[in-house]
Image (cartoon, rainbow, N blue to C red; front, side, top):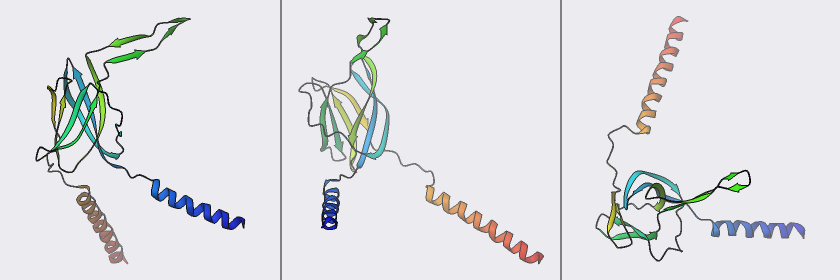
Length: 171
């Protein structure tokens, strides 16, 4: 009887794992610089991972929109740039922490990546454009890793073949 219970729990666990698991997708990590109301893209990194669901968005704030090649809106959300920085510190028994408000800082956002994405536009609270970034990457003319591996493999194969033939000719 114990074996049947263990088997049933095992089967239920397998089914729950299959139904509950979520698969990661392609995401973009945007490193941004905020400077006196204007936002510049420092770096964009594409990875496989998860982006925030953003169910709770501020009522007022900046709006980031991802547009496709045909100018349709693929994704949009509101965010508040991190103007406020809380610093902690103690000197003996005295708290020397403070609140810093800055108008020049760097921050990052994680957004989904789309096959037909073209550009990102960030609007401020007044719907004025404060940042426009092109997401289409230029095609590089470098050789792919597969071609490089094939070339190195061929050279190693030819060297081994040469060594084998050299040893056979000495015998």
